[in-house]
Length: 298
Image (cartoon, rainbow, N blue to C red; front, side, top):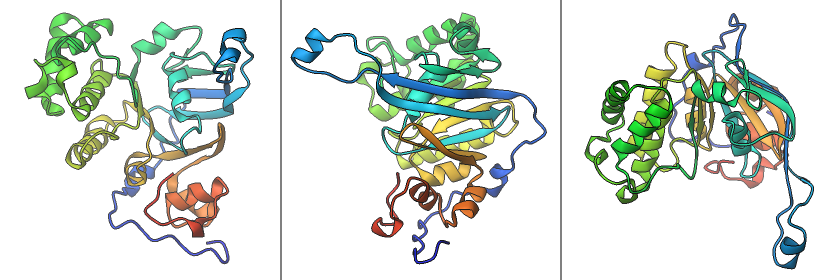
């Protein structure tokens, strides 16, 4: 602990699992590889400037030369404040954005040169804009996306039934998506990401719209069913620090588009003299920890 800085109070609940923090050092291959990845956007304009200057140079930096790897079977959490570049990073890995500089690969395939190969091996859950067809039923949507992922109709139907039961969606499957609650659509999006049993899973705030019971069940499902056998690699964004402690082998801390650190939760706490992941983030990002209460998260 740094001199003169009081420790933040511990949260009243603990989801931490020390067993998840054992990194698989003997695995040579990288499920995700990011090298000097950068992304900039044109500045947002309004009024006459937007009309007379429709094409401007990308000067608003979202990612600045970020590099890291996710090993096969590993779970890596990305932690950072709003605007740190977390969702931009996931969208590049999901082949939805093209980087300004550097490159990234998923399951050995470059996200720019071989996007189709990347998408075949990838499951992606976006934090917003789930992209469902509102007038189709939940079942029709999942069957459609299953066939887009090269599943036969019969295989897609079996997988949809299995995931509907797993995510407690059975009563919603034959209703139009536009009639479903935000939490139900969130669960539907998570089921879609897992339809084709991907090698690599990208999750952007997966439990954000879920109630406490659904969020706890999804964490249990990820830990016991998806991550247990080491066949699926996970990169996820979360603001829920106990969730990060439970699921992540390592944590990557992003701030203003830059990677500040990437290590196990235990190592990050030791290196920064911190008692909690919240305090780790605040110290790395340069905030004064004594001005923030213990129940705040970045």
